[in-house]
Length: 282
Ligand code: NAP
Figure 1: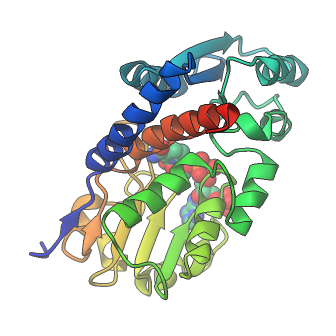
Figure 2 (figure 1 turned 90 degrees about the vertical axis):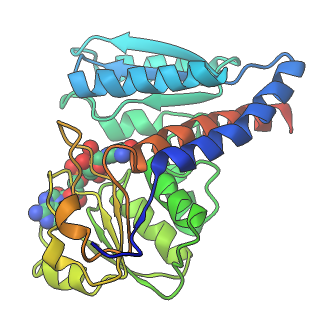
Figure 3 (figure 1 turned 120 degrees about the vertical axis):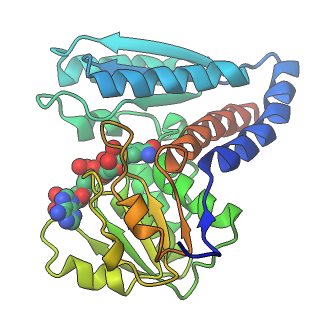
């Protein structure tokens, strides 16, 4: 193992974000405002159910109100959008999160895009995505924002670095590519049709794994000294990076769990508080 290896501790970064929120939540309370996040879960996918419960618990621990809406798996796109529109109109709700993925028969993009931009604290709408690409989103997508927060917390340089992002989903790979580009990295975004993926990864100063395949990134793909952020979260708490195999090569790496995941949740809470403050004109 590299003697100077830095383990990027997501719990530490998340704790710092949450600590900064406490005073802001108390200040809102003096104005009679409790930040409120509404979470919609369609169907009963076990992993999604767990994520929604974790987010609800994280809200409670910090004094953020959390409303959970469970809809049956057979909910139609129109019914889901009607629910979202009610939450858009509800003046007590500051943030709306539609848990991804929704059942296949639902038009997820249409549902995401029906979330009011002011309440899109998970940064999933087309409008938030576009704002993020320009670098001024109020609420960038939470996992990409968490990745950037970890880089910033540990003061890891991004400008001028070659960042290779593996994955191009609209909630992760694409927005984090844009964020890295906006921080002056040279970005290569890889996907399932990329040929010679390993060649790109071998030239990366920063590797972002957002593939959804357990232990996908191999140790011998890693340039010595590279920084690795693993957004993957596969069944059994397994990341997209073969962690043990990458340790000898990396200069810094996020573990799974306790890496990107807790910072993603803390970012969601922060966005909900941001939204509540914005509504109060703070
Ligand atoms: P996704 O929508 O399934 O996207 C996966 C991406 O990986 C796609 O762009 C796909 O390419 C690409 N890909 C698949 N196989 C590949 C291969 N062999 N070589 C190169 N690229 C390949 O997944 P996602 O929602 O972005 O999530 C990715 C991972 O992050 C998952 O493990 C998920 O659980 C995790 N995640 C974690 C958090 C967190 O808070 N930590 C939040 C969200 C997601 P194509 O576009 O060509 O299909």
